[in-house]
Image (cartoon, rainbow, N blue to C red; front, side):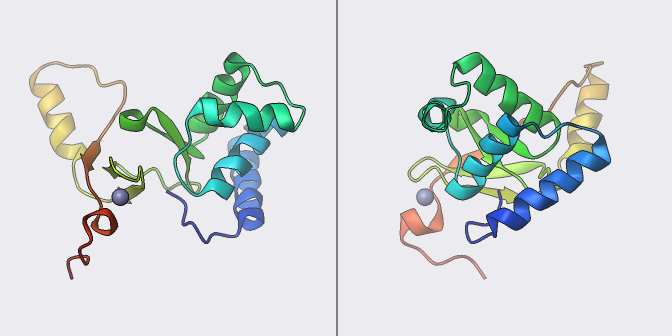
Length: 151
Ligand SMILES: [Zn+2]
């Protein structure tokens, strides 16, 4: 997840640069959605985004919202958090293999753990054709537990 104190304008500029490099269009609607997620600094559900789209005079039907979110996801700028049924802004190239999801405050923390090799080996053993990944560790974050982070 993008850091909460991130400079939104800088993040949007980086996203535009990333899209140019990938030859993906960051349409005004996609850019607006990404901006909402960046400003929120937390996962948001599509239904939370709809009133914002409407208030900004943008297409605010669920189909167009999901279309924009899917395009941002495909471009690697947004991650879908299945556990929360929500979307979160990601820094370009920050496709973390796993996230810790706090079920209390719904905060999401990307963690870099080596899981891909083991998962691909297991899939090979079962002749399973891998199409995607979801690795979400659900629990309660240190802040919600009132405990300090482990050193
Ligand atoms: Zn929490």
